[in-house]
Image (cartoon, rainbow, N blue to C red; front, side, top):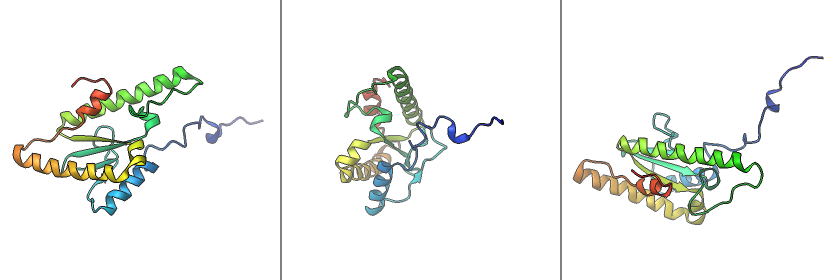
Length: 163
């Protein structure tokens, strides 16, 4: 009798949860493309957190966050009823990592925007307009002050982080 490990038998409970090219991200990217917003990079590994969408010439990093995994403050989702301590630790780790990524980017003079999955579902067009407006604001702000516009403070305060 030979003993071997089948790689498929290893813990696969979270394998279906993708970090890239998620449905909300694909919807947003398709809408950005349709509105004529192009010239962005995807999952830019050189930046903290590998933001989902990056307008590198504008120094804008956009994270498309799933409400469940990143604990959307608007949705106020309950913890799963089984293995609650594991999930609480998992979500706390995710939120702390998000905070650290935002702070790192802000300190590197990047403008950071978080788009939540629920906001994409509720009003995709509004999210595209928000990004278009941000690009215009960064252009206008940079012309007058030669400094980046920082919008991530609201996200950080949502997580209870003081900057």
